[in-house]
Amino acid sequence: MSQLSLAIALDDQATFDNFYAPTGTPQFLAAHCLREQEQSYVYLSGAPGTGLSHLLQAACQRQASALYLNLTTLAEHPPEDVLHGLEASGTVCLDDFDEVAAAPEWQQPLFHFFNRCQDGGTKLVVAAHCPLEALQVPLPDLLSRLKSGVALHFSDYRDEDLRRLMQYRANRRGFYLSNEIALFILHRTTRSTRVLMAALDAIDRASLQEQRRITLPLVKSTLGL
Figure 1: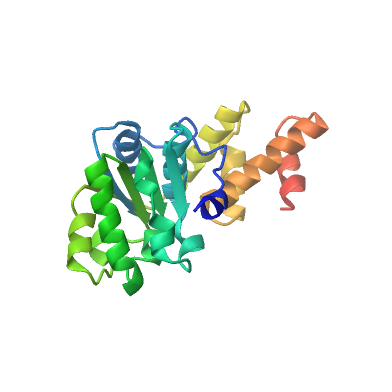
Figure 2: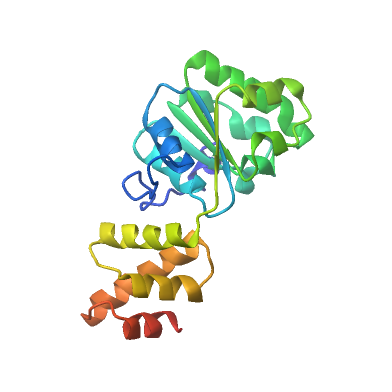
């Protein structure tokens, strides 16, 4: 298990402070649930780029005994080996749950793992790219466990949300990103939070290396646009 867990590296930038979640949105409610210990089990869903992995990793950054597992990378391993002993952690975050939800060999191991977490007081966070009602789970008892806690579905970020997200993250990094530049980047790159954050990284590095303000010419040359 140590070899499997070592393959899952947390992103140092994935923190609650770096997470853009307007008040009242499912993302905001999810961040609250993950910060607090009141909810022993939380199910989160949404399209790629809506902040699922960021939130799960943020929850693990703040607790030494937490574990983050991306099931896409572990789906081919025996489920008993992947899940064995994880309930000893304070928090377990299972990302990309939909990758194994329908697999027959994962049904009983996941069901028993849920029970061990419940019995041991382990906080369990599950994230998938489809809402609960769309999951194809053959084992009724497992589906019942999956429906037993808080479930939140993240809506896709609108263009305005993505602009604000870029400006929020730029501000956290200590530089100003104007509306003009944010919209220029948004309209000329893929509408993916991962792509947009990588663009901010590149712009920030170029600005520091060249000792230049962040202007449209700098952005164009840095991103090749």
